[in-house]
Length: 562
Image (cartoon, rainbow, N blue to C red; front, side, top):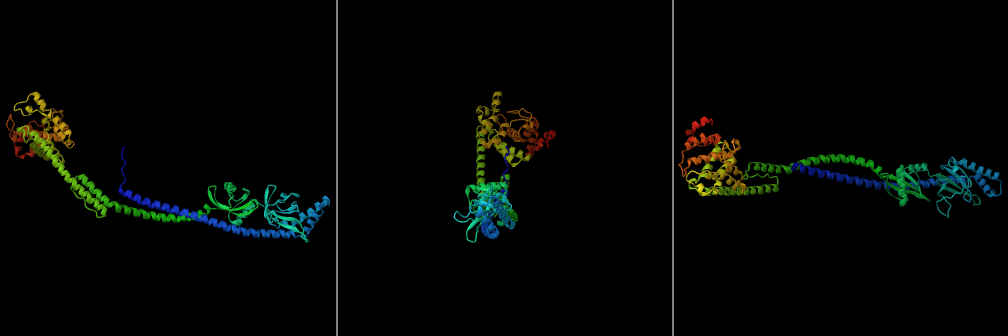
């Protein structure tokens, strides 16, 4: 699975600062919105309290006016006389006479009913039985039906009350009918139906939504249907005089304006609706403020990100360049941007200096160990003493002629020192035999590359030298050992050491022969180029040994090696 690339420090710094400012703006917006809601809620509640006082004053005046009108009607002498006669002689007169008197009473009521702001004018006798009714809803008050208003109290005449008649609730204003001698002959009621028209009038007066409930049941309201149903349930359950309620997903404040008997008259105001205009203006203003703040936050974040990351980026680039060049001795310059970053840079420089010193010590120990191994091998045979050192020198000279990199030259130098380390495992009688070797003895000698590779595999830091040790006897024609590799399948470093090893072997004395001159040895190498040795390596050796190239010019020209 491919690992995701981590974002840069510039992006992280910018994101953190910008997101922080953005979150702060959201918190401010949320807090301001909450405060606006709270203030609107308090304002709506205060307005309802003011509405209650205003409504009470208006109702008091309205009731007074209605009572005054009722009193004026009650003072009608014809009406009084008809009622007095009807009351006095109702038990002894004929039905026809009673009907005539009632018609007279009704006619008198009809004369004044059209001028009254009431749905019905109702006359009742001293026993609270209906005598006559006039007005838009007079048919709800049939003759002889008892009237049972609920209002001011049991022991006082009802002035302001309510009554349910034929399924309809009425609000009643009453005045007594009193004769000149002070006797009461009946009661006159101005009845107003508690219907939708009443609720609409109440809304107009209170400038708020209204609801009329009796014993928790909704009579009339200006609220939407679902909100009215929920408010009815809320009031029926809590019997609250004022408070707040969520109706159809919208927050309302409510307050009871007046209670008349079982009938409660409520005013309601939507907090959400009242705050909507304020919040719209607030959101617009905050949007402009937020846009400006976001732009400033963006610019500030970019500036801060560059301020923080630029010196770190410079330090990171210096570290990358150091890592690429492997120049641990190079000191990274101080940025001067902050004490902390300069302290970090100085600490890193000191650390790298320590690493460089440790690397130098390791290299010295590394080289010393390899030289000790080569010396241990050479000590077994006085005729091969110094062979590994000479092969190393010649191999490096060939590598330089091939324009190899310093790293490759170092591998060749140390690998050449170790190329015959496997001979440690060859018996002395075979290794130091002065005469020709038998096939069995030569097979034992041919095992030294494999033995050498096996020895080096146990030492991790010698791993890159193993191909030289194991393959320096391979030949281009595939007749080498131990694997019989051909041509370019043989690593370049092993090819170089192969030629250097053969050259030194021919130019060094052995127990069974003397040393051959360099020119003769080089001619022999050219003779076997392409089969036993790689021609380009032999050519590089010729370049590395300019003092002997004239002796080998003919062979070089014949092979076409420049």
